[in-house]
Amino acid sequence: MPVCKIQSHAQKKNNKQQQRTRQNLQRQKKDKTTGRVEEVPEYVTRFIEKDLRGRIVTTHPDGHCVRRAIGKIWNLHPGQVIQYLATKCQKMLDQELTTQWERNVEWYEKTANRPREWGELKNNVPKQCKRDEWGGSSEINIWAIITKTIMVEINVDNETALIHYPDSYTTTGLNLRTQMQALKDMQATTHTKNPEYLIYGQNH
Image 1: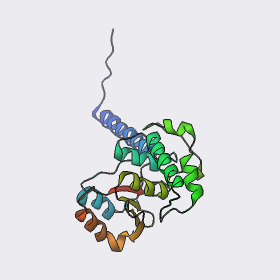
Image 2: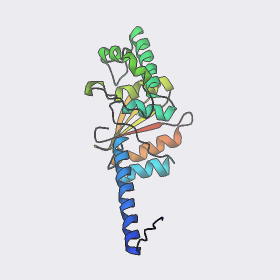
Image 3: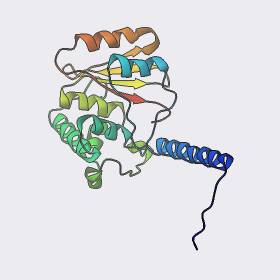
């Protein structure tokens, strides 16, 4: 004979609380896994969500987070981003060119000759790399040139931004606390391609 277990109101309430707790823990674990940047200043979040009408998207913190972030913006796999960067860096080496931001020729040689398996990296499939292989500002700088797009790199740890310009191969910096209006003005006066934004913080 089947047996029905009758729960009291208190038991049902307790079960719901436990379920909510498990769901919160799962969300926290997911956020940690996908590399959520914690403690983003409220005025930066407001700028992204209100002024830009955008949203903050997370990536895996596996050392390829910059390449993953770029890929998410351009709807590419990180492996494709790495291939584009490698091709551009090789062309710059052939032409004996560097940017204002990155003048170290060895960096271009390294970026042009990444491990072959990196070209197969996929979205949402983490693959760790060593600390000295992490992506960074120099790759964002080159991507601005490749796509002819202004790239804005926001560092929430020290509340600064680097603006990478594609045409002049230059990079400028500003203080978010005192110069946020400059970002808003740039967004309003850019009539070709809108700038793209990447947020960095807590080593991610």
